[in-house]
Length: 492
Ligand SMILES: Cc1cc2nc3c(=O)[nH]c(=O)nc-3n(C[C@H](O)[C@H](O)[C@H](O)COP(=O)(O)OP(=O)(O)OC[C@H]3O[C@@H](n4cnc5c(N)ncnc54)[C@H](O)[C@@H]3O)c2cc1C
Image (tube, rainbow, N blue to C red; front, side, top):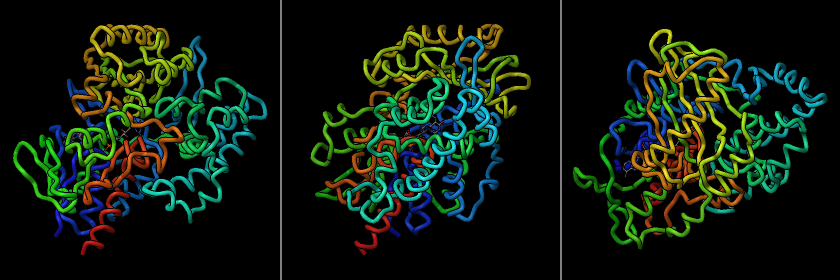
């Protein structure tokens, strides 16, 4: 059996490991932290159970297809609940937009705000469904190694229909005029990628995910997805080593021989770098084996980092849903502070997940589990004072929104930001979500999945194809496994 060494036990590493083990390889994962899951780790304290990273369960078809590949169903691992409302956007002064589960009710919400917009949403979603279908069935499963991969795809015939060359911002404004509807459609761009004007309209497939497929929640928490993947990996014989930081990928000639960890050398026929790409290239490989320079990385547009507060509150709070977006501040000003003139926003937008509204198991009885996130530019200065100032700003607005004091009821408070992302995950510039989804960082323009310099070294994860987010990271692991299986059959 050929041995495969995977660096990193995030979604991408776990997914690659499961798929490779299924193909008959002997797989070992090396994870630097003492728990698995990477950015989707879980943190438990004082009876609260926090998901440290992802909280939006979108595109349920991706995880379903993943587990089915191994003879499982999602219900084997957790109960998946559709949220209703899916999420709510607060605009301040008591104005809010609640997005119900199910299109008929969503059409009514649109029509009420802007007469005629329900019909426009129908045609917007028809196009978004097409993009989702082509994008998620074909595009994301291409490794993005060469343009020729796209020659025989429906995609090529329909590059214009896919909206690859059109700005998302302009595209949305062709359909809708009401500022609240525009913000509703643009918010996934801000949190996951780039300024809407720099994001290709292709990404309206995210609106399809948000509105047509809906927002879901795995009871017990998002970490259940990680746990499910680890169970599948274990069933397939994958060994997962935690507290096992990789220090070097040992290369001889143009071939990786294996991994060096503190505990010794581990030989392997193939290596998968599923930790942050920049870290793997710049820190685990010697200079002659790198394909990208530090300058290359420095000129990439990174997706945001974040300042996160994990809060345990010893009472129930009013006026909150499971997912709450606070857009009671200038959206463009915050987007500029992330992408154009990196700085702490004067009045940040923020996102609050109150998972206890759906799942009482994640907090002691009668209490609330809050995850509060402010998107920030990567590479910013990060000090306790800056975190505190941001906290006070957003808590004041949260208290106004809830109509009651919150700070005095906080019994657990942990904050997490740029320096933590760097320390915990070796995240370049402390990024949270990898590379921004701009046109020139999509598909073949992303850092490549396969090293041209080290024959048996491959990459997976949110910094390579297809991109950031839980579903793309899982897909990334699947794609890299296929590439390795193909390469291994050539070698044989
Ligand atoms: C705060 C936050 C909120 C998010 N919200 C959402 C959301 O709601 N929905 C969504 O779909 N996506 C969301 N995302 C994005 C999603 O979580 C990520 O895209 C995905 O988890 C990335 O997985 P990955 O495997 O590529 O990387 P990671 O999860 O970072 O895994 C890489 C692993 O490599 C390990 N590693 C690093 N260096 C080494 C080394 N030298 N040796 C050994 N191991 C090493 C790290 O410790 C880590 O465990 C969010 C991300 C963050 C940070």
